Amino acid sequence: MLAQEILESAAQSAYDFRLTAFPEDPLQYLFADWVPYYRMKWAIARVLQPRRILEVGVRFGYSAAAFLDACPGAEYLGIDNNSEEFGGYKGALDWARRITRDAKAAYLLADSQQLAEFPGGPYDLIHVDGQQDGDGSFRDLSKALRQARYILVDGFFWTRKNFLNVSEFVYRYRDRIESCMAIPGYEGELLITVHPENREGSPMLDLGRGRGEAGAQLAGVYEALAHLAELAPVGQALDLTGGRPEVGRVPGAESVQRIADSYLTGLGYQVLALNRESVNTAPLAGPYQVAVASELVECLPSGEVDTLYRRIAGCLAPDGLLIVHTFPNAWFYRYGHPYRRREARKLGAYLPLEPRSRYQELMHINEQSPRTLRRQLRRHFRHVIVWFAGDPPDPLANLMRRFSKNEMRNASHLFAVACQFPLDAGDLRTCLEMRPLPAPLALEFRILSAPAEVPAESCFRIRVQLANRSLRRLKSGDPHAVHLAYHCYSETGECVVRDGRRTRLPIVKPGIVAEMDMDLQAPASRGRFRFRLTLVQEGVRWFDAAPQNLFADQWIRVAGPQ
Image (cartoon, rainbow, N blue to C red):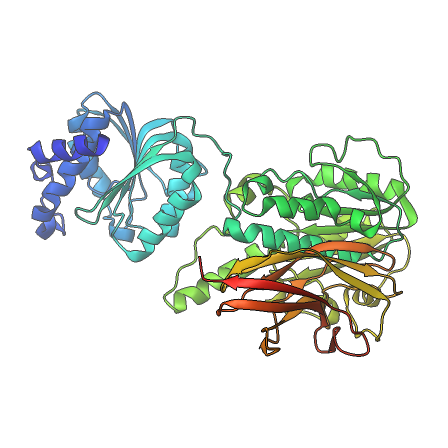
């Protein structure tokens, strides 16, 4: 309805900006094209009827005159830096004052990029000049979003760079935007209606990655934390990884939350789990053999982080560990992102000015660098090891070798281990690595449940149980990860699939009986097939072969595709 009203008003308008145009404007050869352009601005103001208007980028005041003609009683403030940059004209502000002298118009000589916020808000309409470098448009729009009812973006289609930056702004703040109206015309206009509540957050915060990736990324973090927790003796544990409000709203969140809840209990610990709001208020009994804080310290003020470390140091057992994971490594955004933007520009590619997700913008008030993380931990623990990890997190890479400066600024995760007893990187490597296993091992493997029939080429799951009666731990850690895998045979005994899909194995410590789902894929042809389920240690051996001979067979009928 709003769009139709504006278009109809523009079509019926007789407004002609040329009646007040600067007679020596060097761009007057474009005036004929600009007539419908300023009629559209006039029509937008006539339909919206803003009482207070702010314009960023005034030039000769043509937009100001159009707005004030459509809304004679409106208050207007124009901000201009009086320069030749981005289509400006030095001294043009004098003409703008002249043609609006009978209206309630004021002008501020300033660079909008240097303003923390626009003066005199809130406004009903903020008009942002799109003829900037793209980044400038994004910054001005971010300020306008906090102070406007409507935002009119001038030159939405002016350049590809500006279009991409404005589009990134709309995507990033979509939870605070009620609607958008794109008007092609001369260089294009984008009319943004700000949500009436103009709220800072919403029930659907963006994670900065596709929501489908969030579960997998968090699962990788929890797996790395579980590997590190193996260094600590089994006993009582503090789980400080909870309290992420957006986890329950992403696909796969239920399975991720199971990992978060069970990665310590699965290792035999008695766990006290605290959310973000209670980490510094809940009573702690102890002694705790391990405390794990993941994606927490970047969301707490520095003083609260110091309090947290002091509390944990006071209740850890003498041989206990504090394990910290934080995302992002502050260097990843401070140094890595500007470098990646420069490289992208060389290739004609686009990266947004602001790399943080909406969740990170709102919640990350204390992003950690390796130096700040180590410095604060050393106040309360005698021995601290801090290292980098990429995305997805591979905590072993930086422990095996020193990262270059470029690798450090491009590593998005930080891990740390703090304790009161001597600990070195060699101990951590031993904990995280999966070395070749001897054979045979005292293992038992069986199928708990499986489908009788599946469609051709479909992916499906089989529930299995693995009992570790040996003295060795099993896990999917580098360099020789242990995975669940399978072969597939036809009724005539022909091997249809030799290297089946891999399923990562959780840590299965000695004496543990673990249940898990295996991922499989049906062959393309129909018929009856025997799936031989087993384990494989990458680069070492298949466990169904001698001398281990560990496997379980399941016959499944493969029907036509769904």
